[in-house]
Amino acid sequence: MQTTLTINEPRLQATVITVTAESRAEILLYTPPGELANTWYALLVDGRYYHLIMWKHTIGRAETIDSLDRVLVQVQRAIAALQPPPIPTLLPQRDIVRDAESGDYAMYLDGELVGFARTAHEGETTLDELIYSRLAHRPLTKAETLAADMVARDPDLHFAQALDLARAKLDTTMDAA
Image 1 (spheres, rainbow, N blue to C red):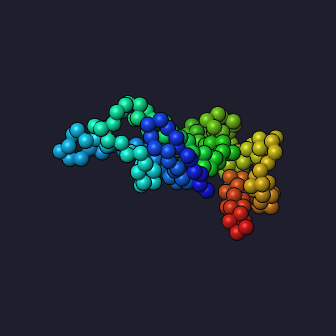
Image 2 (tube, rainbow, N blue to C red):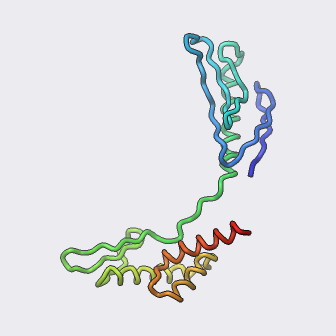
Image 3 (cartoon, one colour):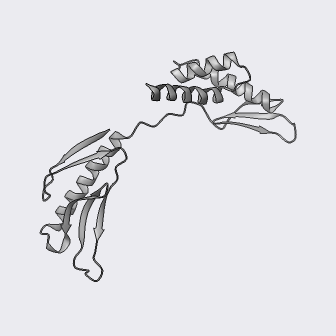
């Protein structure tokens, strides 16, 4: 996927720039060795220069650099708009910690103590059930529904593992389509 921007900023030549989600943009400053007076600025997008400006010979230098900065922001926003949305983390952080004195296992969800178990396996199972019950109070995604079916068929399968398998299966199905 790509998008095309028409750049029309004061003091810069009108330009059309096409970007993708993988595009990179920056303002490049270049001073040739031994020529301190000849500083060049340019917008660099995917290895291509736009709006090459020589500092020494530019009238209204500060305004021109401001325009170049505004173009950079426009390009970066266009690139960001093409990025896929982040995948939200559905499952809370889970920890099972053995208490050396009692021998019991403390169960935590997102850093909050939710109970104790006699064995680590019992802790895993209890946390799976707790997470599943919390997820059950809201509409399930396709991956969650498939994972719940997997856990129902195979009680030894943890919900987190089933969810990873379900997502992989759905990704494979979507790629094949």
